[in-house]
Length: 325
Length: 275
Image (cartoon, rainbow over the protein chains, first blue to last red):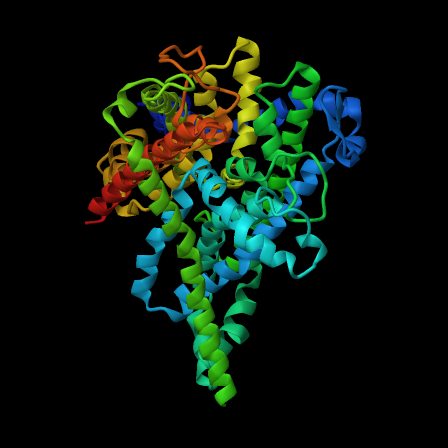
């Protein structure tokens, strides 16, 4: 015989079983996983916190506007202006995009829309190879192969156009060399994401255009490209993000001169390059701080660019985006 | 009509040309690294430490060992964190928190490696007051985590639901199902992802420049500056000596072989898994 109160407690015990059954090991496992997942957020927070800690004081001391707008970088006088590096980063990335974009998009279109499917799997190997070559090896190649080629036939030829961006002594080392190396390095990034985006274009769109009598190129222009536009813009932005942060290859061929020149032949400097060259030998907290502030700037720009690009690539997929780009 | 045909053919040719344009630098680079680099390879190159300027001979043995050492340290921190975060995303990541972590990992993988170097400098070099292998390893570990997390998640999600359900139906607790059934099934793929991440880390230069710095001698202490192949290539390449330039090419060949072997091993592993 059971008393009423006993029945009530038993029922409660039964009701509690789902919680109780999630026993200690299971809950521990879930907790461990959650902690590991949160570690990713912790890493992000740590990056921001440390950059602010080291670079913040220098930035505050100079003032953000003065820091970004000043074109003088003179370590001996403790004057730190980021403008030459920002300018160099933007110019070289611009050159890289102008060169890499048509080739990447053309290559992506060729592989997805024109070439037989087998070709794509064959070509994907050299593209992965291109992406896997370490930056310093690109720098080595740029320094001893590309720079001499630019110095002799290419820059004198370009100088004949008399454009203001192609003037001055053709020394090889400079914005142009950095831009070309960068273009080669971001090519695989843009191509592979563009391929991924193009593959999400529904076949029916293509077929409809072809059925209406469009040629293959017209189908691409009318049906495929408009659909994939947001994703291709996103791919371009991810490529740009890589270009902005590219360090070693640029450091080795840009000429390392903290000046602002209109000519692409001139030697310049970029944000990552100056950090790479000066950080280890920085004299005093001010210089270290100023270099870290450049890093903070670079971080902020690349993160914003990446967020925007990811959103665009996701939008163009229009599906439940789970697989990372 | 013929104009449209012509445009079609022309654009197709242009796109095919893009393939050629993309392959030219690749072929040039690989050919030159091999042809310049192979001349300097000798037994000495793999067993000796760098010779002082002006002396002939010497090798990069300490740099090869240093790269492996630093990458090993990076793996000790980066692999558990990265793989763990990936498993979290796959197993429990269907929540706003999971979305936030996933998005953060995506964005983090686009952060320039030199910025991560600054962070490692602030975290490890400043408190220890010296450049060290540990600092270099920490920088590389931070770089590994986001990519590993994302690839691990994809791989764990490939494991069929039915496997997990079968295990749970047999009364196996969730944690054991996760570890012994799901992770074990995905293990081959995760090994591939780890090898690819290691290959990427071994090729990094920028985050090592002011963390592990460089060293002309052997070093096995975690709190001392350590040589690495990549930093050594950089120093040799920007030096004014022809002999060092030759050494840079040879070291680049060694680096490419190392990175290539790791990626190839990874790819072969994943291929055998599919079969």
